[in-house]
Amino acid sequence: MRQIVLDTETTGLLTSQGHRIIEIAAVEMVNRKLTGKFFHYYINPEREIEKGAENVHGLTLDFLKDKPKFDQIAQEFLEYIQDSELIIHNAKFDTEFIEYEFKLLANKSFKLSRYCKIIDTLQIARNLHPGQKNSLDALCKRYSIDNSKRNLHGALLDSNLLSYVYLAMTGGQKTLFGEDNQQHHQNFTNDFQAVVRKPIDGLVVLLADEDEIRLHESRLKEIQNIEK
Image (cartoon, rainbow, N blue to C red; front, side, top):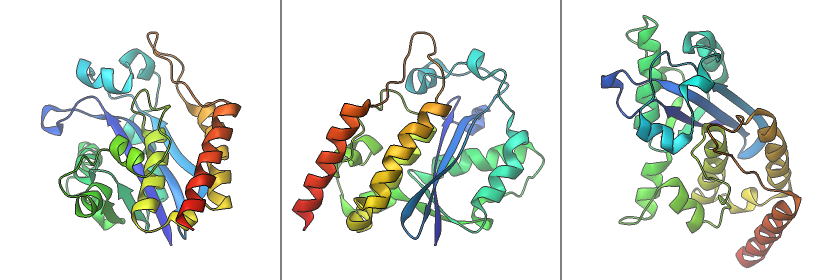
């Protein structure tokens, strides 16, 4: 079973105001194990970014101006997600933006659900934890998933965190803390360093150093022992 955990960042909140995707990322799981493979692009939106959105993700138009436009990555994206289960937190938001991008490419009848099944982790979380906060940060805290380096929202980092949250919420603790996924955690950190954006306007994305990763892995082992 192939599952793709996806996230986007955008120029603003509403497609009705012409807002666009500026970052799209996904990480791959096969049979509930993270493979270390991922899809990731920053995208030139060809329009301004709302200040409120920029404060959330730290992406500027100056940084994005030499990045590919959505039409240049659209086919690769469809091939990547084809026939998978697509896992998204607050799926309505990301789905609407992805479908809007394809409609701008003259594909007026485009529906993401025709290419893959869509699973909304926000709905899963609300069913499991009614009346509680179910943001990605809140879920990371609830399931003891280290998100201390999430100083800014970022599609690649958030997709990775969401994959851990999804496994935890759907009864995958044994798989989540297994040796394969712990190795993925290390591999992802290394890969993320290779693709993360350079500091923008003084904003720096801080990644875990070796000591912090070691402490994190120690904490995961403690949690695994408790589950036993």
